[in-house]
Structures are given as structure tokens and as C-alpha cells.
Amino acid sequence: MGFLLPLSLLVLLAVAYPGGRSARRCWAARAQSPGGSSPTLSATTAPFWVRISPNFIAVRPGSSVWLNCSSSCPLLEGSTLHTGLRRGQKLSGPSWISFQLLDVRAWSSEVHCFLTCAGVTRGATARIHAYKPPHRVILEPPVLEGREHILRCHVTHVFPVGFLVVTLQRGGRVIYSESLERFTGLDLANVTLTYKFQARPHDLWKPVTCHARLNLDGLVVGSSSAPVTLTSWAWSPASKALASTSIAAFVGILLVLGAVYLRKYLLMQSEA
Image (tube, rainbow, N blue to C red; front, side, top):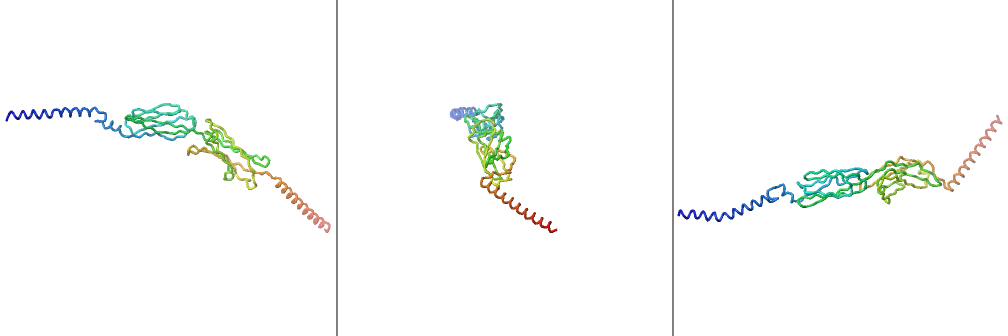
């Protein structure tokens, strides 16, 4: 009986030992696995988002801007910026990176930011618009040439001209509007709009204004001129003939009335 008890213990140890060694190997493998024992690193295998801020910005030509790329990834492995703009300084943290872009002059630019987390790369896109609202909008006093009035509106130092709309209004109503989308230059420009029209008597003394407006994908900026007024209108040949006849008739009536009054006055003097 005493011999059987040690023998039973030896059998139990022989059976348990391989499993224990296997258990130790499994524990060691888990301890060495990148995602086995660290909850922070295991999170990197989950989906993550990438954001760029601001994702839309409008600046004056020649300005510099900062864009920030951030992510829900706790530890980024790499970052890339794709843009045609000139780059400046760069700042970064565990889950974000900021880029400076210099001398922005193109009216519209796209910036793509890509961040890599746990071998997965995701990106976000921002758009930058460069613009310059009109420095001044000047409407010249109307000039009468023949039977037409000529209005000239000057818009100075504006960009981009291709997104400019110039409108003339008389008494609050639009009388002419022109879009300059045919212009594709990348520099500040001065624009002059000339408009000819025949004024009518009811147009006199109504204020005329010139309005310049930039519409950049929903961003609207603009300026207006000081008002001018029409103080005369062109006479047509028929109108001139009618006016001359009317004036001649009026003068004739005055002469007749004057003669009658003079005759009565002389009669009264003779009787006295």
C-alpha cells in the first residue's frame, strides 16, 4: 500500500508536466504578442478616422495658412501631405500633425493629408481659395453721346476675375449684368465695364449704381459704387420737332396776349 501511493503520484506528475510546459509556452507567446497584453496597442487594429481642419478656408493672395491633421489613432506610424503649394514649418504629436503652407496664390487648391495607423492609411482633403475683393468700385457720371447714355464702371484690384459679376442697377432694378468667367488670369486685375442705353424721361433723377460681386463656391464677397443720376436725355428728331412746335406756339400765345394787354393799356391811357 505504501508503495502504490508514491507510484500514483509519479503517474500524475508525468501526465500534468507536458500540459504545464505547454501552458507556460502559451503564456510566453501571449506576453510577447504586440496585442496580447497591452490594451493601448490592441486599439490600433480597430478602425480610425482622419480629419483635417479647417477643411475649407479662403485667404488673400500671398497669405500663409496652417492645416491640422488629427486622428483617433493613439500612436501614428507616419503622415504624408500631397499639395502643389509651398510648404513651411511642421509640428506633430502622437495623434496629429500640422503643416504650414506658404504664399497661397492659386484661386483654388486641394490639400490631401494621409495618416498611417497599424499599417492602415486613411486620408482627408481640404480646399483653399485665394481671393481679393474689389479695392474700389467707381461709376463715372453718365456721358450723353448722340441719343445714348454711356456708363462706365471701374473695378480695381480684384482676384480672381473669372468669378466676378458686375451689375448696373437703376432705381434698385437691374438694367445690365455681366459675368467675366472668360478671364482666367492668376493676377490682380482692374476691370472696366461699359454700357450704353437710351434713357427715357422717367429715368431722370433715379440713382444708378454699379455692383461687383465674387462668388467662390458659395463664398460671396463684393462692393458697390456711389450712386450717380441722369439729368438729361437725348431727343429724337420727332421729339425735337414737337418740342420746337410747342415752344413756337407758346411764344406766339405770349405775344398775342402781350399785344392785347398793351392795346387795353393804351386805350385806358387815352381815355384818362
